Length: 465
Image (tube, rainbow, N blue to C red; front, top):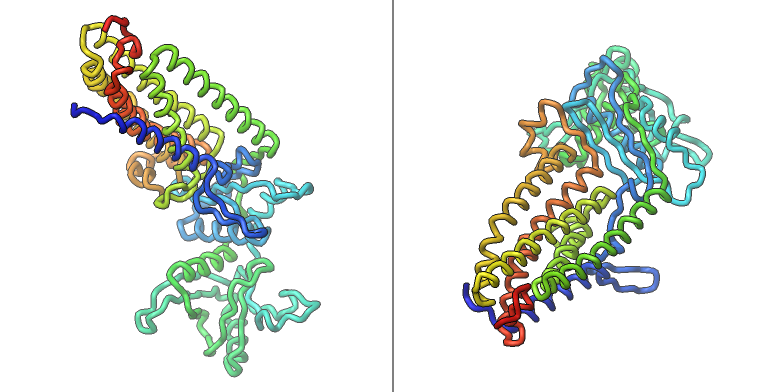
C-alpha cells in the first residue's frame, strides 16, 4: 500500500465534519417572509404519512369486473382531480395494473379539525359526474354554477376518448366517440354552435376540464378535440373524460389511518433512541478499539450524514425522498452494518499486531483481510434492499422494472413505508463502502504516519514497541 501522507487525516476528517454540518443544518437565506433554500438540511426532510399522519387506501374495481389499462388510468385521473379539488396537493397515487389496484396516500388536512377521512375516501371512489354543456366559464353569471349551463351530454353518453398524434395537422388531439344515446343531442348542439364558433365545455364533477370551440356540425358521434396539447396533456384530458364514462364505483379494498400525534411521537422516539445508540457506539468503539475506534466514529458520522443527504435532496442529481418510520429503521440498520465493518477491520488489525507485524503492516494486511468478509455481508444486504424496493415500489421505478419478470407473477405491493426502508438501507450500506472502508483506511494509515500514533497499544495490541 502506498504510504499515506500525514495531512490526509485532517483533510478527510475535516471534509466529513463540514459535510455532516451542512447536511444537518443546510443553508437558508431569509428576506422578509421569503425563505430561500440553497442546501437542504434535516429541517427539509419530507416525512412520510406514517409520521405526519394521514390516510392510506387501496381502491379496486368491483368484484368480477376486469378493468383494462385505459380504465385504470381513467380512474386514477378521477381520483387525482378530486384530490386537487379538495386542495390536497401533497399525495402519493399509484396504479398497479397487474392486480388492478389504485393506491392512494394523502396527509391530514392542515389545521382542519373536522376532517373526516372515511367521508373523503368515499368521495374519492364515487363514480365521476362527467357532463358536456353549452357555453364556457364566461357564460356563468356571478350567482350561477356550471349546472345553469344547458346540458348536452353526460358520462353515460360517452363511449371513449383517445389521445393521438395527427400527422396531418402535426399536433396532439383527442378522438371522442359517443354512444348512440348521445349522437342526436350532440349533433343538434354542434349544428347550432358551429355557426357562431360557440363553446361546449367539459366538466368533471364541478370542475371544468376543457372548453373547446365548435367548428363543425358533427352528425356521426365522432368528434376531435384539438388545441395546444402536448402528449401528456392530451392523454390527461382523455383519461379524465374516460373516467367520467366509467360504469362502476371504485371499491375500498384496504383503508387505514394514522394520527399526526402518534406518527410524530414514534419518529421522535426513534430519533432519540438512534442518537443515544450512536453515542454509546462511539464510546464503545473508542474504549474497545482505541485509535481505529476513533476513526470509525468519524466514518460513521459521515455515513449517517450521507444517508440523510440522500433523503433530503442535498445532492443536485437526486430529488428529495419521503422518509418513513421503517426508513429511519433502515438508516439505523445500515449504521449497524457500518459498525460491523469497522469492528471486523479493527479486530483484524489487532490480530496482525499480535502476530508480530508493525503498525503500518498490520493496518495494510488488516484492511485487506477484512475486506472480503465486509464485502460479502454488505453486498447481500444491498441485494435484499433492492428486492424490497422492487417489490414495494411503484411499477415505473428502476428496481421494479428490472425485477418485473419475477413480480409479474404476483404483482407488486406498492407499500411506500417499506420502499423507504429499502432505499435508506441500500444508500447506507453503499455509503459504508465509501466511509467505512475507503476513507477510514485513509485516515487510519495517515495517523499511523505520526510517531506518536505508532504505538501498538493504540490499536489494541501490547505496548511493547
